[in-house]
Image (cartoon, rainbow, N blue to C red; front, side):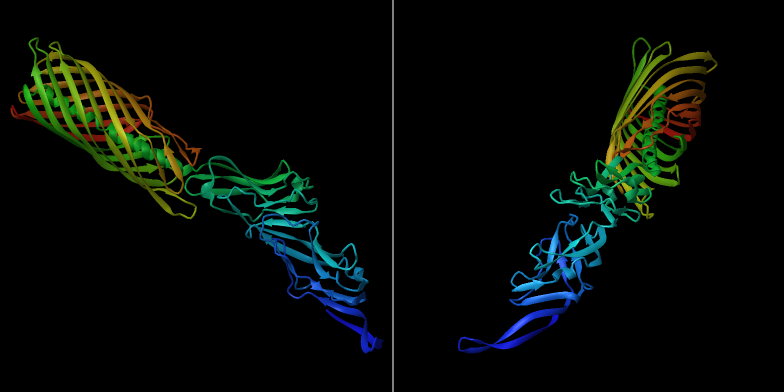
Length: 538
């Protein structure tokens, strides 16, 4: 503070003293003055025990003054700071000449998430001896970031203080997001400004911004916007599963498809045992192929599969014979998904199984099998986030498969026979959960296939030839799941297919070898080839 004063000599008792007159203040400067709204006390300019005169020529400089606020509570106009404290002065005259001075003010709050802009004004205390400073109601609140990992409001009003935001613009046009992984499917809401029940004067026209497109990891996407709700400014993000999440269910369909393709291995083994000798038989069946399944889009599988085990065959007195066996179940291969881009993965499964079949003397037969084990799905290049980063995931799930069938073999003479049958296959694959750019919960998957068909067979000494035609229908095969709580677009292999089979076998007495193939058309398209081998042990 700069000023001038006059004085004169005088007698005080036996002393000669200098008596100072009132100080006329020419300028008041507040260099680098920081006013903190977070609880830190400011240090005002303290006037000593003199008389002070602030006239119309007194200049006030607030150029270097700034306001800070590290809290999340908006500064109210009812809050004030003391810039000049004249409570100890002998007299203060004309301080009102410095009242009503304004400057532009802005401050960040909530860790820089929002910037408040407006004006500050000077005033005088009730005793007219101190110069005060307060902020007017803000002209704008500009939001920069919204952290979805936090549930606290970005900014709040103090319910014990007064605000008028009728002239305030709430600008969220450049709002960026943090921790979008915290979003869930459906409507997510965060409070940008909590009014705490105060009538703010804000209207829809106070809000500045346009609807934003949001993408969270590999799981969710949607739209977000700010709006007024119950007096608060809130940000709503309405999220749903990204289209690419459908690939996860397609990968799950590929897993159960691989298990379905092993159903025919059991049938090939039993067919090979039908004409074997009584006693113990060791057997092995191996096969492979490529199959395409329509799922709305489609998947293609390339699976190698095998079964090996031991069986016993026995002919009863009435001419019927029965066969029972147990085996090791194994499969390994790859798949490709074709939906909104191309992905791929690997599948393998390991398990065990049992089967039984009884053929009556009149050619009627019944059969059944049970398989169970664990299947893994190692997926790659299926999921990508907004930056193009790919995510790999692996699932491990238990599976079981049951097959029941019955039929009748009619002798047509000259080594020819006709085998007409009905078979039902139930396959179950457990669900699993995993994280890959978001959290996925995949439901268990069931397949229920009915097959009806007939096969022509011809026996020529040691050789047998056959060909057959069947129709099968998948009644289930629907995959479901969620991505961060949002429903994923389902995938399904439900539908009908035609199966054409053909093969030959040779019996050497101790060994019996069969080679066959099958082609599919319809919901399922492709080719499989199998080789079955049995060896008579006793």
